[in-house]
Every structure is written in C-alpha cells, then in structure tokens.
Length: 398
Image (tube, rainbow, N blue to C red; front, side, top):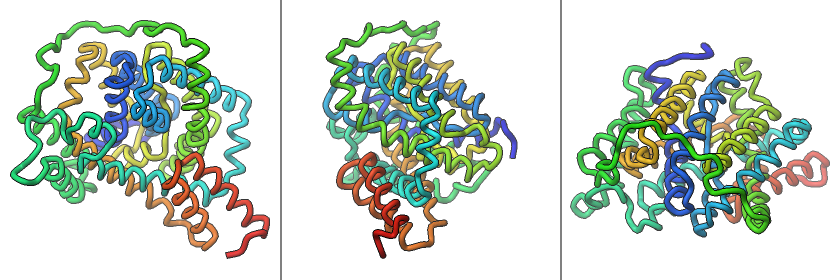
C-alpha cells in the first residue's frame, strides 16, 4: 500500500465524511455565529497537516457533543470558542504527559468495538434523518431541503427520492474504481443543486484573497469559560478519548497496518489540541479526529494521505479565494446526499464488531449501545468500561 496517491478513488474517499462535517459546520456558522473563513480554513489546514504527519488517511471532524448541543441551544460564539480553547488545553495535557497512552492501554477490546459499533449505528440513524428531513439542522430551518427550489416530487418528499437514488447508486458503484460511488453521488448532488437549487449567495461570489482575522471575537470572558467547561467540555472529553483517540487508532491499525505507526494515542491527542488552538484563534469550531470519519473516508475509496491533501487543499484554496461565499457552494449539495454518505459510513464502522466472538464481549458492546441510545456516548463509554472490568474480575457471570 502506498503512503500517498492522487486518484479518483482518493478524491472520492476524501468526500466521504461530508455527511458529518457539513451540516454541523453550516449550523455553527448560521446559528452560533462562527466565522466561515476561520472555520473552513482551520478544517482545510487540519486535513493537510494531519495527512502530512500521520502519512495515512486521517479524518477531520467537528466535536459532535459540542456541536450538537451548541446548535440545539443557540449558544453564543464566545461559549463555543471557549469550549475549543479548553478542549485544546485538556488534550495537550493528556498528550504531553502521555497519560492518554496509559488510559488507552487500559481499555479492553470489546469497549473499543462497542464505541465503534455504537458510533456507526448513530451515523446510520443521522444519515436516515438527513434523508427524511428530520435532522436538527433541517428541523430548525423548517425545511427538509432548505437550499432547493421545491420540496416535493408529486406527493413524495424530494429528499426521499434523492436518498433512494443515492443509496442505489452507492450500492451499485461502491467497489467500482473507475466510477467511485462517493464521487458520483456528490457530483450528482451538486449538478442537481445547480439546476434546481435556490442559488443562495452565489450572486455575491467574488474572487479575491480572503484571510482570517486573528481572534475575531476577542478573548473569552471567565463566565464563558466556566459555562463551556461544564456544559460542553466535560461531556465531550470522554467521547473524544474513546472515539477520536482509542477507537480511531485501533481502526487505523486495522486498515493500514504498519503504515499507521504514527497514529498513536499520544500523537492523535496532541494533533487535536494544536488544531483546536488554531481553530479558536481564527474563529472556527472545535475539531477532532474520529473513527466514524475514518470509516467514511475508507469506505468511499481513500487509502492514502493523498485524500487528506486533496480535500484539505480544496477547502484551503476555496476559502482563501471566495471567503465566506464558500458556504454558497456547499449549499449546492442536497441534505439527502449528505445523508447517503453518512449512512454508508455508519455501516462500515458498525461492521468492525465482526471479530468479537465471546458472549461477554458482545454484552459489553450492547451495554455501550443501549446506554448511549438513552443518554450519550460518554456515559456509554464509562459504563461499558465498568462492565468489562467486572467481567475480568470474575464478579459478573454471563
């Protein structure tokens, strides 16, 4: 396997995680008031530097607990940026002291698989919500496809029609290297958006050099830092440790073997810390890696760090050339198309449990899934870890 390649498959794979990345990014710009230039530039640079350092396909994702809660409650930009700064501090401490490596080695394999399986199912559900028009972002906009001229094809919602077509195309071309499924679905969606979209903001698109402002919202106040710590950071931290570090490193080893020797608990943690310091300084959102994103990129064809360089370069060049108008270009992709990408990424990630054979391991996975479904992945991770160690101590029988 090569360390770097530029091909149709790599580019198709680089688009695979748009289903997670774009809805949360757009939501945090529109609802939380984050700076579009800083947000997308930090994403692009994080992709590039992750690919260059790790040498294999490496995902870049929003921190989902922070993103979802901040959007749902319309938090201020100061509170969101405070969470990114604090996450950077916590992650740097965990990485610099190598405490993350110690924690990672204490997590049993069934817990890792439980995190991966649960995240996969959640991605599938969120993908279906995007197709059906039931995601948080769509409900807030009160439209399933807010950037299309029409919402129905006869009596059938257009999102469902696009979702079904996208699923069929993806299933037919998923293993096709000449016509990659991810590329076909995204390009098809963009063409549909060009023909039938509202074209919101495209008339204002002007080429130029658009640089981010440094600390566009100023330094956070103590009240914002205190609020962000308890409302956003503490709920996010266990999920980041479990999914973005431990489960992500495990999945990278499965996919790339020895080529992923730089994808360690420590390096992933420090990488995210530095990315969050950058994102905070230019008005972007909290960023992380993640097993779901890696599964998405891999499922749609990404096999080398070339995918990182292509998608990172695309984000970086576009945002520097068109600035905040990049949003108008992204609006061309229908929500249902993003849902299709998200659904298949979830399937890929959920199937990682296929190597778990023992009943105890399966039970731990089911505990994590059930607790997460009723609360969140952070609680699922903690309780799954507790159950796994009770089994090891022989205090529990199954």
